[in-house]
Length: 297
Image (cartoon, rainbow, N blue to C red; front, side, top):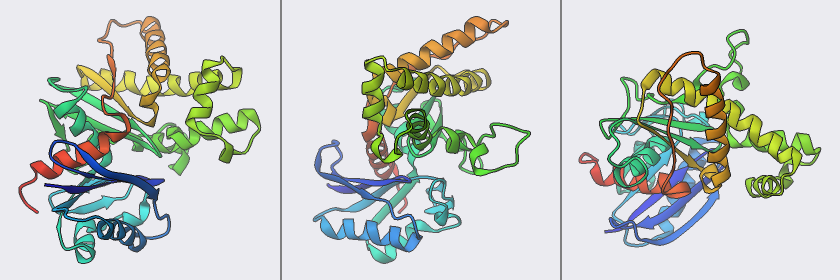
C-alpha cells in the first residue's frame, strides 16, 4: 500500500509517497499557488499524475476543516479556500480515495499516536509555520470542537483596543514570516536574504540582533502557552513546525515561561514543553495516520 501524502501551507506544498509503515519512497516540495483554489487543485493534481501505484491522497492543509465532508469552512493562510468543498473538487481532478484534515491536527495526530504526546491523556500541540497551528488533545485523541476549530490559536485577538485587522490576530503577527521580518528590520537588510538558519546561526554566535529577536518572539509565545495551560491544564505541550529543529528555541521558551511563573502571585500549575518527535514531517505522518483511520471516503 502506498499513499500520496500532501502537506499544504501558505508557502510550500510538501509531498511524499508513504506506506503504512511510514517508509518514504519519494518526496519533495513546490511553491503553494497564491492566486486561486483552481491552481491549488491543479498543483496537487500534477503531483498525483507524477507518481505511480498509489491508492489514494492524504491531505494536510490550513484552515477550519470538516474532514468527514471534505469541506474547508475557512482557509486560514489560504483564504481563497474559504467555503470550499476541497475533496469534491480534487476528486474531479484525481479519481482516487482522498482524505483532508487541518495541518496542525495532522501534526498533533502524529505526535499523539507515535511521538512526543504518545500516552499523554491531555496535551496541546503548537506548530510554527506561515501562521501558528494549534490542536487540543483530549484522552489521547484530537478534540475538534463543534465547528472543527478547537485549538485554533492563530485567530486569538492580541489587542482589544485595535480594530480586527489582519495584524491583530496572533497567527499573523507571530508566524515565521513576522519573525524573519523583525530580524531583517533590526539588521536593516532585505528580508529575502534571511531565513531561520541564518538567525539561529547568529544566535549561537551571540549576535545582539538575533538574540534580541529570539527573546522578543519567545516571550510573546510563552505568554500564550501560559494562558492555554491556565485554561486547559494539559499534561504537556509539544512544540513543532520549523522552529522545532532548533533546540535553543525550546530553551528560550522555557526560560521565558519560568520568568512568568516566578513573577506570578498565584500558585498555579506550570506548563511542560517537549519537542516534537517528527519535526517538519509531523504533518505528513499525521495526514497518513488520519487517512488510514478514516473509514468513509
